[in-house]
Each structure stands twice: as structure tokens, then as C-alpha cells.
Image (cartoon, rainbow, N blue to C red; front, top):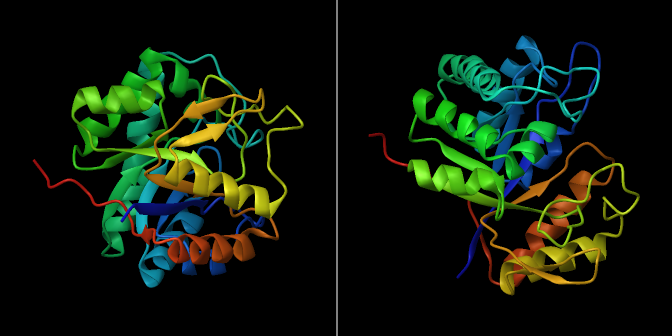
Length: 256
């Protein structure tokens, strides 16, 4: 039986601005919590950790670029040294809240532009991997399936989770279609569910160019920042279970 983790980016509110719905935590198995750079603030981080523990979902850090105005989705000219420091800083911040609340951090998933840049840039992916390893080598590294980030993590000895996206389209090289492209997001729920099933069962995805791309799926990302998010998460989980797919969080490596 294939086992799949369902993850959701969460804790992306900031001050008086609210993003995300708690109800989605009933259907996912992991959350990636914003660490204050692209979204989130200390109070939101603490509250989100408390929610995750209450719902029994695995907790991960979601480090991004220091870009609140752009929600971490704008590319930045950064050095590997800067990326290393950004990731260590953000993992450390969230880890403190997790420890204070009596929880356990299981994984790290970069956010937005940092995630997409690291998928293709070897130097940046290695900086992220080194940061994760140096903080805690037992943490699972989430990255785009087939990306440089996954390859770097495996080479460094980290446990990795190849991530696929339910509501995003793919390019012929296996990368995500940029959000600036009108075809970037799949709005039709039936199409999104079909894409996930194909990626899990057949290990392939149809690109916007019309070609099939080989893909491995350990975890599926569900975006929780739209009105239909909770309904879709419920539908996808129920559909996967009917198809014989086990829904479980990624297991953390034993500490070395």
C-alpha cells in the first residue's frame, strides 16, 4: 500500500491579517509553519504550534526570504552564505516555540521563491541542506520532486520527502509553472484530484506542454489560503483512502 503525507503551509497570518483556516488541520498530516520572514509573527507562530499539537499533525519549519510585502514569492539575489543563515535562524525560531509547547519538530520545507530557486540552483540547495543538517540531522527535508534540493539532501544523508502539488501545473522539465503564468494554478477540483492520483499511482504528471514527466510522490502539498481549501482537502483525503492509499505523516529519522 502506498503511503502519502498530506501537508499544508500554515501560520501565514501576520498582525491583524489572517490567512488560512484551522479546519484544514483535520485532513492534513503535516503543517509547514511560517517563521516570521515571509509571513507569521511570534504570536502567530506560538498559536499555530499550539493548534498543530492539538490536532496531532506533524510540525515543520517553513523558512522563506525576508520579504513580507512579497509574501516570499519574489526572487532575491542572495548568496549561499545568506541562505544558510536565513534557514538556520528561522528553524531555530520555530524550534523554540515547539520546544516550549512540548512538541517535536519533524521537518523543514522552504517557501516560495527560496523553494523554487533551490530546486534548480545547486549552491542554494546545498546551503539549505547544510543549514538543516547543522541544526538537526534528524529533520526530514521537503523539496520539489526531482529537484536539486532533493538530490542535495540525499547526498548529505538527510531523509527527504519528494513533494508534489495538487493544484499547480508542471513544466516539461518537472518544475512548477511560474505563478505569473495564467496556467499556473489548477482551479478545477476534479482535475486536481485526477492529477494527484496519476502522480501517486503512475508516477507521472502531464506538463502544460503536453508531455508526461516522471515524478515521485512522498507528500502532497495542499494550499490552505483559499475558500475552497478545506472542502478540497477533505475530498482529496477521502478519495485517496478509497483508492487504498494510506495517509500518514513522514517519520523523522532517529537522532544521530
